[in-house]
Amino acid sequence: MKLYADRAPVAFRQFLTDALVVVWVYAWIRLGMSLFDLIQKLAVPGQKLEGAGNGLASNLNSAGDKIDKVPGVGDSIATPFRNAANAATSLANAGKDQQEIVNDLAWILSVVVVVVPVLLVVGVWLPLRVRWARRAASAARLRTVTAGRDLLALRALATQPLKRLIKVDPEVAARWRRGDPETVEALAQLELRSLGLR
Image (cartoon, rainbow, N blue to C red; front, side):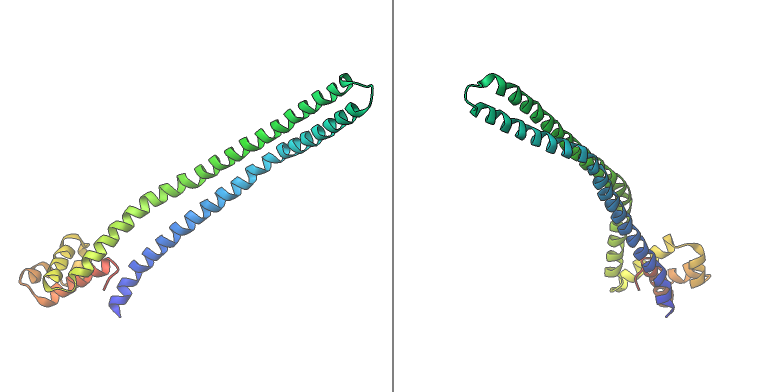
């Protein structure tokens, strides 16, 4: 029971860290999506301008076509309508261009808002997590063989805080040098628990 109790804080810290990283990434992705939607609202005037320009161009072209059909009127009266329709088409194109610029801006800013903080955290967390996984995998392999238990005990002597070593035995180094099996086992367990293993 004591071994599990000692192991629980390490496992809990690992779980909590992983959960915080997931929440951090999720929060920035949601913020990026919200920012994208907010910036896309700036495209509404461009949509209205495009719609109005296309509608006006269509009406002016239609009026020019109808004037062309009137006998004896000629092309000179229909030309201003067609010119006005071309100007309205230019307005519609300007509205379309504005929407494209807003869309590009929304994508760029959203990606930057997501990528920078996510890379900062994942860039720190992931190497540490990979390093722990490698150490834990090596320790798990070593714990199954006698020589591996000795190596884990030696690592515990070299890396564990002194107060933990003294809790094992005040004469822990001397007992380890003599090859005392209980001390070797206690030190190996101490090293395994520090990695969240048992």
